[in-house]
Length: 147
Image 1 (cartoon, rainbow, N blue to C red):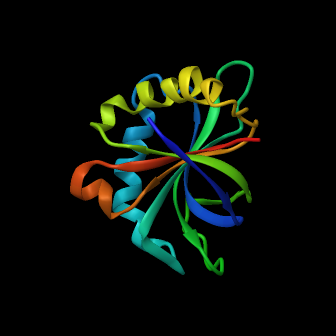
Image 2 (cartoon, helix red, strand yellow):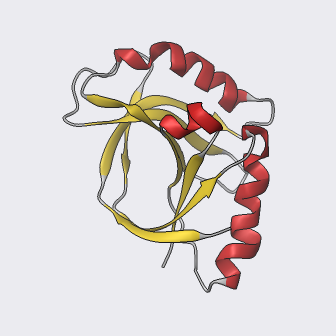
């Protein structure tokens, strides 16, 4: 596993939000609905999708958005929200396995890679970036804010 360190600009993302623990496949189910509705989002790339994780609470709940970056923000479709992806320094990892194993990959990043490389994760928003590679071979990128 390797990472590259990148500095990203802030971006506005429009999409559908789930809040909870996703113990029963709620996030994959939300993606199924979002994949049928993303064409409703105006002023987006339509080739780069985001899975934003944020708003972690002590009871284990968190927010997850399936969305698209937009510029400028136009009419927000019913049932969707706008979230700002913060600018900052991120460790970027490429995931190259079946999507069912992405949780194990996330765990290995925090348990092994970050400590072994003296990278301290910052609280806040992490995200997955899905582009054309995901449809071709299942690849996506994971971004974690670090200091």
